[in-house]
Length: 287
View 1 (cartoon, rainbow, N blue to C red):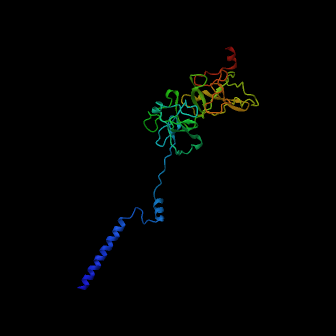
View 2: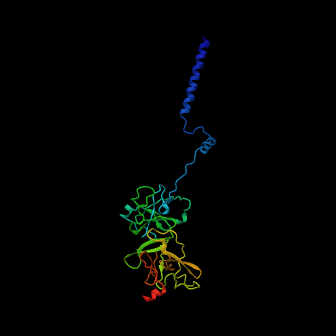
View 3: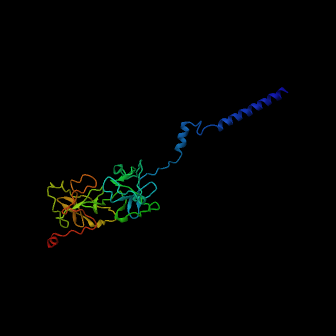
């Protein structure tokens, strides 16, 4: 009889012990009891998920390389943003929302040196590329759309490799004028006394080049409003100067800030798509 009772007590003890073990297991926190080495092994066996950069360099069948956000939505430049500010405010922003990401990450091929931030008139922030504020176009419905390029001749798809840009500002009066700039917005001029593909200003020793430096740019990619075949080059005492429709092109040495156009005059005009082709010396004499 005692033997039976002892066996029954032993059986009860084992059941209670098992139940206690099960209870401890179910109340552990996730990961409890797992060593650091085991965690490392588990992590190493998990495929890495690559992050998507906030500024991407996308291939577009029409424009080549373009800038987009992380979701592939196209970004744009505005030709009126000639200074360190945005000229798209109020109702304009409904159609052209500003792009801003405080922690930019960039695709390979892009440099952090080309990106900046401005404070808009409403106090919000906006990212810039080579000085040009970045925008979306509200009518772009999906990733890859570029419907905003060329709108009112003011909006251009944001490319990383424009050789030149097209700007619009009040240069000499109250009227807005279009003009060609460098990729970073530096104003470009022609000299009225030059002839077709003939620089009549620069001295052979370049002693006056600091006043009106020749433009030495290799033109490859331009905004869609411009025609790359209108550009050429000439040799100026061993250096290569850019021309537009035969006009040798210059900067003005006293233009020190983005958007400056201090050199504009009848003798030193800017150039745009309405600029007529330069004349040969003989043709100019006949006028």
